[in-house]
Image (cartoon, rainbow, N blue to C red):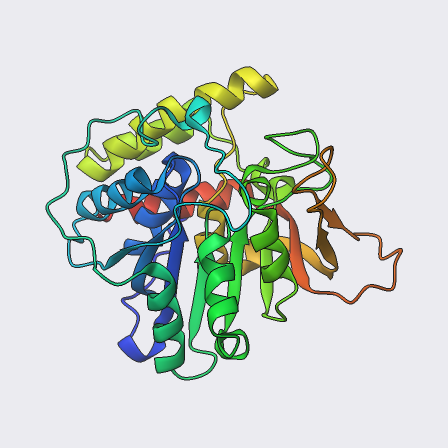
Length: 323
């Protein structure tokens, strides 16, 4: 198996990112990957309500940072409710804690006092234009509220890379909608209409990033605490999708956002228009992707559809083994 190891990146060459997240086992793996990657400068991690309520997502984020040996990471709590809806959660997938699987100790690192939305706005404004990339792993409530609070950040962000949506694969919370977009479609609409450079990791690509017994054991085999915990997270997480889809392994969604930053060449997709359905009870949260360019709607995102799945897992296992 090729190692593709990289030297420690000079500080000036590191990509500055903010991670917005609702952990979630797959969010946890994405955060571990980011913290294990010297090319990335994680400026802060903002929690949003989604897979579980905010009190758990901010707690889980701090647990993951400590698991990675990074109690110095700054974690901020954000929106506890979607912009215009009641919160829908996914304990049926992630368990009652959101991180069911391993037993992780209560964190000792503090939650930052500043609100996540204020942190996003302040950080993007304080940095040079084009310096900060926003990595969105959950519902887009915090991101949309930041764009609404200070529209100037839209032209200052380098990019938003998000996990959300689906087209050819349909939905995973309703027949039409993927969970992150479904939870707060109004927020998604704001983000997709913001004019920010946008890269989308939909179910169409994440459903091709399937775990297997060998891939899970590869996380466990180095014997490190983060590696063992990752395997335990996936042991729990994959059971739901294996039963649902009849697959040998489950899709690992959110780490695709971070892998894209590290090795975008393993992905393929195209620049298209995506509109968000907010009105229809039947298709609420649907990402209407004009893949075949049958409308004259302006392109607003790079929509990823395929990946080198073995390389994806090689990157994950090699990086997490470093922690």
